[in-house]
Image (cartoon, rainbow, N blue to C red; front, side, top):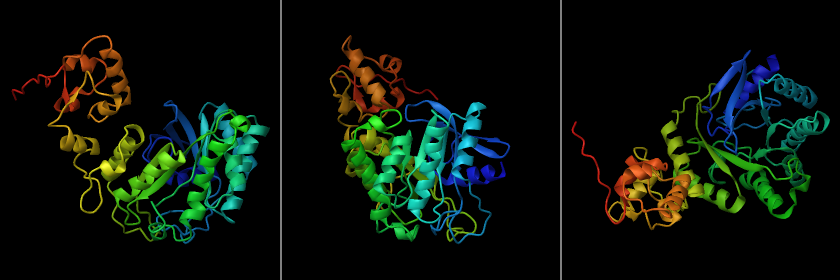
Amino acid sequence: MEKLKLLSSASQIEAGEDGCRTANRARMDGIILTHAVLPNGKTTTLLKSLLTSVCENNCLYCPMRAGRDFRRTTFQPDAFAQIVVNLTKAGLIQGVFLSSGVAGGGIRAQDRLIETAEILRYKMNYRAYIHLKIMPGAEFTQVLASMRLADRVSINLEAPNAARLPAIAPNKQFESDLMEPIRYTNHIRTNFTPDTAWKKRWPSSCTQFVVGGAGETDKELLSTSQSLHHDHDILRVYYSALTPHKGTPFANHEPVSTQREHRLYQADYLIRDYGFAESELAYDENGLLPLEKDPKLIWAERYIKHQPIEINHASREELLRVPGIGPKGALAVIHTRQEHTLSDLSALKKIGVHTQRAKYFILLNGKRPVQQLAFF
């Protein structure tokens, strides 16, 4: 229990299914349990833990870095697997997010993660959710084995490119250690049948950036994210605002605004789900997203406020450009207008459109919506 308290606490620097490190968490006798949103949209409780907090890397932002003096501990794969099964049987968790410090090289660390997952799946017949971390420098066969065992895998890039990475993770090579395993995941999905995967389908994959530690711009981050989504089938990109930790070189670094993190998520969703290109987004002179407004609203005010979109004829792609209309709302509009003309804001509101945001950018049957004047 003491080991698990230490390792579950240390693992909270990892972003996961919840989308940020500030997920709702509960403590069970000092062990942190994470209430997470899974890829299918369902909410569940996961044990998020490291297999070991021993790490030979000197990532400058990380509280587990090799140069930091703190209490470290390690689980053997079979002991950790038994804990996961016990907590699941007790109804306290519905799955596990398993990561690790890098001890003895990334390949050895990955072997231990795989061994733990194999014990769970094959020896203990564990059918619940497993998110498995891919270590820097993992080999192709290890990535394949991990994808056969997990519901989700993740490889943290930390920085958007090779030029920025040394500022926060000087021991890692951007292309060979980090991008190569990401390319492996896409190659496996494209060229290997998922018949050997435990659910007969390949797991989704994600990555994480440390925002604000390497002097990177939002434009750099989102340019890389666009490539990850479109070229490498990365389902989620997580943006974790730098949090300074005592005993690290960044201890006196100014905390990065969580609002910057929030804007990056909004922009990422525009690229992933709304058909926007990174080059369409507005940046300031430093390559950062403006903090005062969300990026979709800035785009709409620039391009469609004076040329509003006709709701009754617009394509799905055009509807998605309107603030207040998301993918579900766009489909609802298209379905509803097949039955009758949409002529007022109340009809849009009933089908899930956020009319207070959308009303400035649309036409309803050729006319701008009638807006109630405020008296106070």
